Image: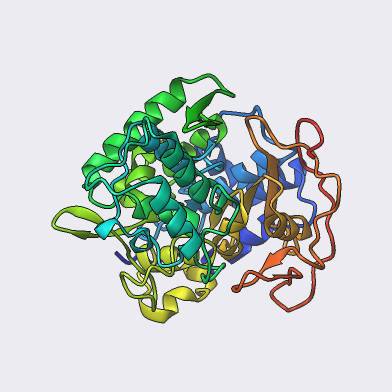
Length: 434
């Protein structure tokens, strides 16, 4: 599917959104000049609670500028908006919710040939050995419902990236394209059909939405998060973007069938939901993952993570093929709006040409770029439920805020190569974080 995007016709309108220090009056004036009386008929955001400073007004100006009321709107080439999912549209993580449900209900299958190294090319020898010891091959599903040692080992490798003995579980991956812990959940879905995985996700969703905020559940011998909530503000924003004529997508680092189940709750169908995709065989998921750009299916070296999210958007939404999908596309083709909460979202947020909404979870690289705000297009908002408190120390932008492809820490640099100075945390909620 290839979608053409508006070209330079929206440039003048975009400039109004990027005015330094945009405030309520300036935003309203820009919208009035650009759209006149028509702006009053544009779909309007209805949820005000939770938005920081003039963020809601600037988002409304974006809707009025690029939406169907804008002078440059072309319904044949709808403007594109892309949201991360976990902790951006909802509070907490749907991948975690599904993994915990599967462990509690004994739905993880024994690896092929009983060899845990078949589940991930990046699994270390100590991790494979620890898993084999804790989870002896059964030929069917593992008894994690009752076998706490097995459940604990899988939960540690997935959640902490280490064995229960503290040894590294994964190594040798590209840190800008792959998070093997996230990928591992998709790979542990091996042997199930997409429909069955959706059943698992739906059961976990029902439990997590019914549980009170702050609830925990026992998995193995440990306690983990047991609740999730949709953000009313993001539901409202997605609904209003769609009404205004935007093409709205979710791009998630959770398995795609899982993300699809949750995305229905904000009115997004499977076609508009992008996640980690497994290679299928005879209608069932395998432990191999689909690639993107120049990465072949089954290579398992790129998922929807940092630069992999950019690739997925370019390939699956914009229709860019081959290695070109891994590159930044011309501005006229890219998303107008993007929203995220973590370093995994940095690349596709930077690609957005209109506004970039960041929910502050104290993630170093993302917050360095958002606070630097060189083009005045970044919006920072505290999380809408249980927001993080202020990070006491400045973000280490000038030294270790960036994670390289080999995992080494380095300064965060702007597009021109200059280093971003350390940034103070100024947009937050709740108490000071430790």
